[in-house]
Image (cartoon, rainbow, N blue to C red; front, side, top):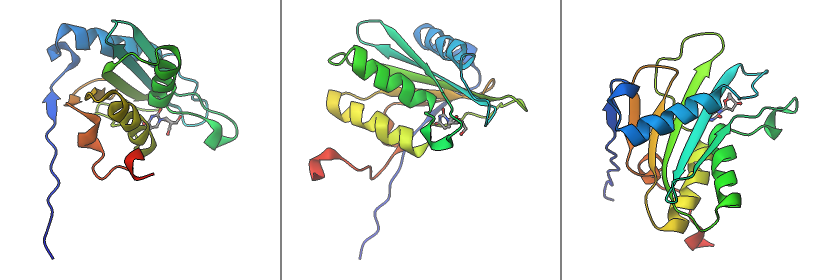
Length: 160
Ligand code: THU
């Protein structure tokens, strides 16, 4: 037996104002998208914005449904739209912001497991890391240089 250690390094910014300009703009697009979340059940709004290599920005927000599992997270709404509209165009960055309608969300909210798996598919397909930035409604912003940092031991298509 031997132990295997899995490590990830993340960067933490104190505030959105500390981000480089292009990232700040992208996070502002995610904040705008968050306002269009349809979240009457969870009261939890999430916005996502994707920057593509052709400079296009694709946004998404969570869209809920009375049949709960039929709803979709913001990140997947955005990334599937990017894949559908710009199939061969690489994804450079993804910015995510989440806010509760009931309380101030000042902690960074990372993407859920299903979204990580979905984002991973595109990172593997394009053979280039996607930078991920996530925050709450305010406060710290966390950066991961690659989705791979957030999902060790992911399920990959090479095993199929
Ligand atoms: N949600 C997202 O949009 N992204 C995530 O990564 C986690 C959760 C949404 C789904 C649901 O509409 C609400 O947040 C509460 O789970």
